[in-house]
Length: 120
Length: 107
Image (cartoon, rainbow over all chains, first blue to last red; front, side):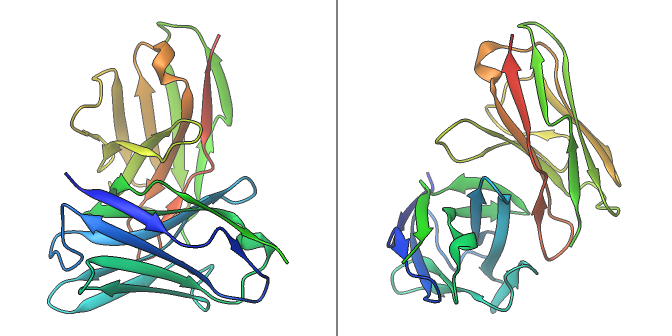
């Protein structure tokens, strides 16, 4: 049974970096068949996939075009978790952020969601 | 990015009705499409992957079809528990995108 547990601050100041972590149980971040994603949701932007990291003999990343210059998703094999960093945030980045596991593209397991507000 | 356009934006139907939701892609995505159901305050739940493959545990009244740029989610007999917002998602390209959602209400 795969379980994803998110952690991180709910309030970030404009221009700073948003950082969230997703701890994995029931699978390995180094799995050769799964990938580890971040998705966000806001009333103005709907559901927005941000990117993913996965291991296939080496580590790969894919990022959404909309955030590619500001986003980084990284695995931490020692803690079996992965993280999201989003730089230079603005109020437009206010959203509920989810981590999620995909297997061949569709997102089957999701974290509980974290509301992140960007405000001074 | 590949744009995903769902219709209708909202629909209201009675218990037992057949409900159809459409998703159009701005370019061909083969069968690389999933459908999700989301209820308020909850994460989305995958219903269908590869356009027509029903996920384990999902009631058989849900079905998906289509390929290329046109896809359909059908609820054959709407139930009260189906009140939710439904999203399509393409995973054909290296940058995935969702539709804007279809809110299904029970009359």
